[in-house]
Structures are given as C-alpha cells and as structure tokens.
Length: 504
Image (tube, rainbow, N blue to C red):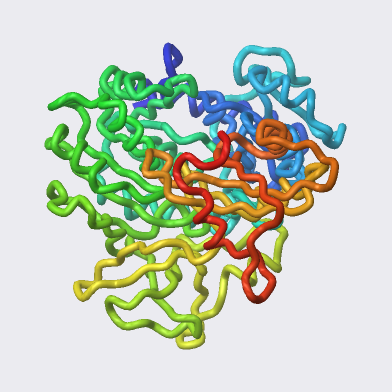
C-alpha cells in the first residue's frame, strides 16, 4: 500500500508513496540537468533514505548510478569519479566537505535541495511533477557500477545490469519468503553489493528497509538495533557476526521477531555460527557465496543444525537458480569430485565486464572451450564433494576478503611504493584468528637517509586508501626475502608476521 513504510533510519521514515513521488521529482530534475539514458550519476552521499531516493531517481531517468564511499580519502573518490565520467554528481550536505575538496570537472553539477532540505545545490526538485515516468531502459542496460579494489592501484568498476539484479531477486524473494510486513536490515554501505539485495529485495516485496546508521558500531548497539527494529531478516558480512559473538551481545532467545539470518562476503567460522544457532534456534541460517561480478550471490547453503564439528568449514552449497559454478583446472577442464580447482561462474548474474577496461574484462571473463559459454574466473579455489555440494578452499591470487570488503593487496602495494623514502615494499595477508578474518601486513625497505616509521607510512596511505585497506602490522627490513627466481618470497615474508611481531 502507498502509505506503508518503505524506509526507516532513526526517526526518519519514508512511505512508498513518498519514495515514489520524491524519486519521480528528482528524476525529472536530473533530466533537466542534462542526464540521458546511459549517463552515469555519481552518488556522493552517505547511507540514508535520501540516497535510496537518488538511486531510484537515477534509474527512472534512464541513467546509471555510481555509489561512492564518502568515508574514503579524497584521492580515491576522485579516481572513481574520473573513471565513471559522470554527467553529474548527486551530493548532499553531509558530504559537502568531501565535494569541496575534490578536484573535478567544474562542469559537473551537485544537486542536493530535494534530498535533505539543504540548499547546497543549484536546483531544487520540489516543484517537479510527482507522476510516474515512462521506462526508457532495457533489461540489458547498466543499472549501477560498483567500484572495487584493483591490483594496479586504480579501483575497477563492475557493471551491473537491470537483468542481473532481477535474476537474483527472481530466485531470492520466493526462496527466502519475502513478504509485505517484513522488516529487513540495511547494514552494508551502499557501495557494497550486498546492499543491492537489501534495497531491492525490500522494495520489491513491500517490506520495510531499516538502514543501520553508520554510528551503530559496537556489538551491543547492533544487537539493540535488531531488537528495537523488530527485524525479520538480518543480512551482513560474516565478520559482523563474529564481532557480536566476541562481544557476547546475543542473549538466549534474543530477537524474537528475527526469522532469517543470511551472511555473505567472507568465511564464517563454525564456532561463531554455533554461538548464534544455539542462542537463536528460531531462525533459519543461510550462507551465500558470490563475487560482485556475478551480482550479490551465486550459490547458497542452508545450515539446518548446529555444526557438530566446529573445525569444519561451512560449505558454499549449490548454485542459485539461473547460475552455474564450475570447478576447473588450469586448462578449464572439470576436475573430479573432491579435487581442488578454481571456481568459475556462468549464468544470469554475470556482469558484462569492467567499466571501460577491456583488458581486465578479457582477463577475468573467459570462454569455456567445451561449451563456448562465457565464464567469470573468480580467483577462488574450491571443490565439489560426492553429493555435489561446493566447498570454498581459499584464494588463488593476492586478493583477500577482510570485514566483507574485497581487497587487492596489489593496490596497497602499488600505493605504498609511491611514498617518498620507500625503496621496496611487499604486502601480504595472514589469518588473524579474530573477527577481521585476515590481517594485512606491510614490509618495507627504506631508501638511504630516509626516516620512515609505521605511523608515517600509515598516514601516507590513509590519504589514498580507505581505512579497511590500511595494514595493521608493519615490518622494516634491510631487504625483502627473495626466492631462487629473484621474486619476493611471500611465503617466507608471511612467516615473519607471527602474532605480536611488527608495530601497530
């Protein structure tokens, strides 16, 4: 119903009617600003109901939205905006300082008036027609571009089409039983692909989307949010569950309204899952797996009972409808059951590729020589057991997952190498044993007479990289270990980062 609540954040609520009318008004404003079908609109806004209005308005104008992490350093935001080549920036007063610091094309327009009452933009959408607009996009058109970490030092944009999102929702909504009256969490930031399911899963089913404010951080605060919002579904990265477990924030029989618990983005330790399942036996538990390039998730595994063996990894399960996951060797031939190979994905969720980067697209999206079908090379290692269940084994390259974020260690390494006084550097990751899952470690060799320390290096990196990509362990060496081929011996380097070594 039009007067049902669509979005909640703190004391702010938007009904479906308000969401429809405001997004229609803003869409018309964008069109008046010159936005046309296929144009990019960068959303330089924090997570808020206004940002959801912006997303919908951009789509209704026939354009492609690019959500930007407003907590990232200015230099990184500028890289994303430059790569996206947007028609305009859609900002808000919350991000005014970031917008003011950015060195961007002066012709780009920042519009804010309709979003939050601020008059920082040159135009206001309040006077525009609230009626629906005709649909001018096709299912194959891009809907949004999500920029992820890139190994060369530049973020890469994953193109997500309307059809890709629709395909996942066609499977997920009936599978999880979404319905009007559901109260669904919106925990991930809006530039993170998990948020796509939160937003469109809620709005497609007439549910309430409860956006988790950025200042709700502590385990007890997150627990109170779930409890007070009477959520029926909680979906987040695995580290959130581990964090709340470490803080012992979940009471026996807690969250009586909660029905579904879903996680994605990284491995969830069975001990953490057992904690939740024992305390919340009334909930269902599902592990989703899939990279951004395959739209939210490509496989699922329902955990029916508390894990008996809390040392055995949770499977990633079976492909979602319309998807296929293959376990292949280096020649792209299938491996036998229980043998380890690389995971390749094909199907309805597959991205057309990276925004304006044919080289990266060709490297990641390959053709199956046996079927001629298009595959995405995940870089993940896995195996399929005798029952056909998929199991994640680890990464085949330098990419890691930490706190749900996909991080290319090469991007950190490239950035650190540009710091004055650094002669040589290498970035490795080691298991943390904590809620982060993985610790990023930096080793460096200083140039003669250079005076460098971890605090100074970390501060330099913080000017170019978001906080979640900053190393937490540091080690200065007279030279980096090398193998027989003269390359950096990364296994030997990892051994140097034993618990307690280095500086934080």
